[in-house]
Every structure is written in structure tokens, then in C-alpha cells.
Image 1 (cartoon, rainbow, N blue to C red):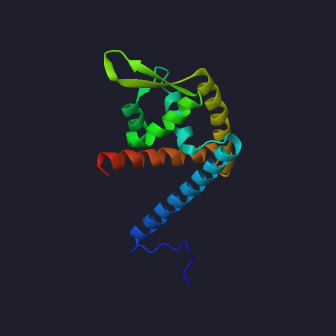
Image 2: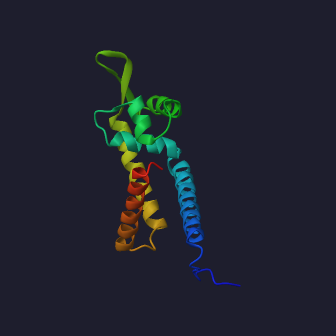
Image 3: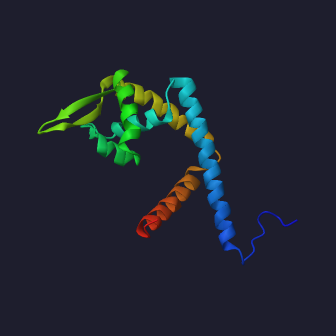
Length: 157
């Protein structure tokens, strides 16, 4: 049996496929852990956390279409989440002057406070899961993945 890391120069595409599958497996595992931790500790979901994370960066709020664009999901996916976050007092809808059909979605003080608690826990969980990477390794991998993303966007993929 061939060792796992014995590279065959004839199969670079196989190595890249293995790399993609490892990325995917690691990403899914981290995401599953985050989902479970958010559910257990905060009785919330990852999509709710993602909406609050997006809005936390925009004090003035975002239109629903802008929020969907930031999250890279459809308006329909975001509407129900925003509705429930508004019911819970974490978000408010503010009418857009001059556009009766549009409104901005904005974090409330309560929403900002709750998000700060969740974000601190989220950061600690990710830090724990990735503790085997030194800060330098994490930075290097992050930069390389950023380069990959830029390359993919330039090539239209």
C-alpha cells in the first residue's frame, strides 16, 4: 500500500481534489460545532448569528436586499430570520425616507449587547478548534486562501 503523502507527479489534480475534500470536511465539522454551541449556549441558530454579525458592521442598518447581498443568500431566506429577530427585540425596521416600500434593518441596543456576548463565545470556540495552528500559521493560511478567493473571482468561478 502506498503511503498517503507519496506524491505521484502524474496526479496533481488528485492532490488538489484531496485538498478540497479536506477543506470541505474541516469546514463542515467546524460549522456543525458552531451550530451546536450556539443552540446549546444561546438557544439560537447560525443563520440568526450571521444576520446579527452582518448588521453589527453597519450602524445605519441595511436594506433587506443589501443584507441578502452581504450574506450571499436570497431575500426570502433572510426575511423570516429578520422577522424573528425583530420579535425578540434584537433588530428594528426603519422606514427609508422617500421609498415607501423599503426599510432599513438595524440592530437595537439589546441586539448589540446580545451579539457581543455571542460573538465573544464564537471567537473563543473557533480559537479552541484551531488551537493547533500558531498565529503565524493561521495568518499564512488565511493569506493563501484570500489569494485563492481573489484568483477565483478574477476567473469568474
